[in-house]
Amino acid sequence: MTLDNLQKTGQLKPHASNAAEIARLLEAARRNLTDASAQNISTENRFDAAYKCIMQSALAALMANGYRPDTKVPGHHQTVIQSLPKTIGLPGTRVAVLDALRNKRNLSDYSGRDIDRASLTTCMAEASRLLAEVQVWLAKAHPDLKG
Image 1: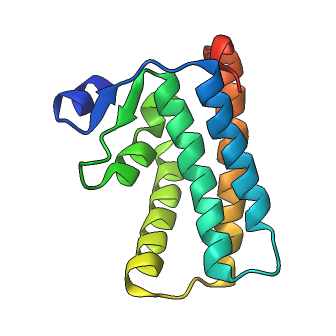
Image 2: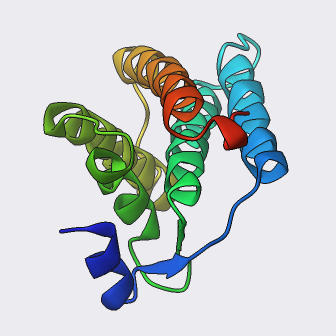
């Protein structure tokens, strides 16, 4: 499915981004990644901060491509993550990992399930990796929006 098709189904809306907006999102992603390293907060909160970095990085890529999710439509986090092959060319295997982390975050937030250390480690590594990939992609594909 293309980004245009996701717009036609109402999952995405057109969006004209600018360098300041992208910079703010990427700075927030970096702060969340730093917060995820804090040893004095719970594993769940650290995981949530790393997950936010993933979402903010993926959202920056989506916005740089001229779209944003319709947050009134259920599943907008899933849409943002699953758009990564179309926005930055992320392989499907990586999207599957990120989507599993999204699901784990949902289970933690909405049913109180614990986050294990291995999941936290994976989420932090994936957040760091995606943030770096989005920054490299922006520099190449949209240097005018590089944050």
